[in-house]
Length: 133
Image 1 (cartoon, one colour):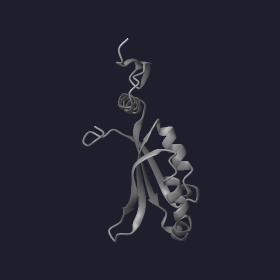
Image 2: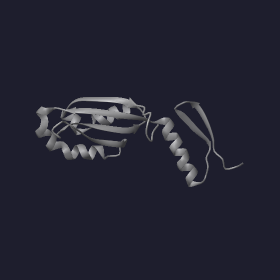
Image 3: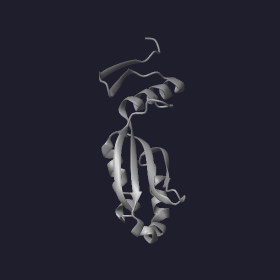
Image 4: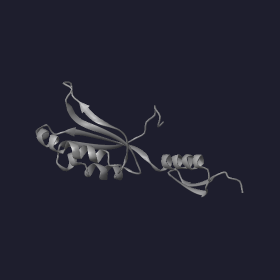
């Protein structure tokens, strides 16, 4: 039997390795293919509650710890700035298995728990230009 890998894809979002290549490079390639077929990009757009600026300062470190926790694979994250350069919310772009993963992650964020964000919107994102297209 040769060392090539054979994949059976029963649906567009699932692949099952039938024969696994033994080289580390091939394993990385297979993992990347599996990840791309089984994950999506999700975007969370959260707008700040202006009445919660004191709470924002108190929970900022916990919020940052949560974003860096590794519970989802964050691609980009950062504040949304208003015309005066002040933070008025934040955006998170992450690779997730489903929107439920992003919803769960968001619901555990201290800024969400303490209502520092007045609105939180979560979307599946399908980029057409860039490194994920």
